[in-house]
Image 1: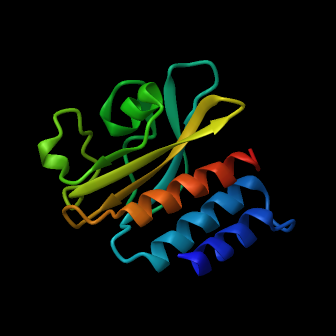
Image 2 (image 1 turned 90 degrees about the vertical axis):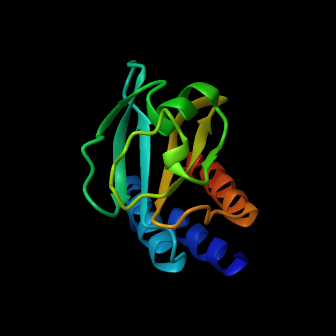
Length: 149
């Protein structure tokens, strides 16, 4: 994971790319390096509205470009301000289905100046794939991402 962290840091620190390009490169790297990350994307608070708007992502297209706060796992994290790991989405009553292939999901909030401004959302086609190391990596990544926003 330390090698992956170095590569992620170099993307975020790159002076050649704008924020959107950096976030897209982060999604691509995670998608390439972690086999069970099957959809990786960012959602951000949509202005003053209590909703999330889809940002850069890698994976199958999604209909969920806007998610109201409280709806689905992403909407819940926008309200709870806490990482949410869902080992099996079929066991979660508030799950918003993006793909019939999705079996598990992890969502980690991004804070800027103490405010929840967005999140990284990762879907997996495997039941219960996410480890403590994944969670720690993503929580570290969200802290790093907040520095460039």
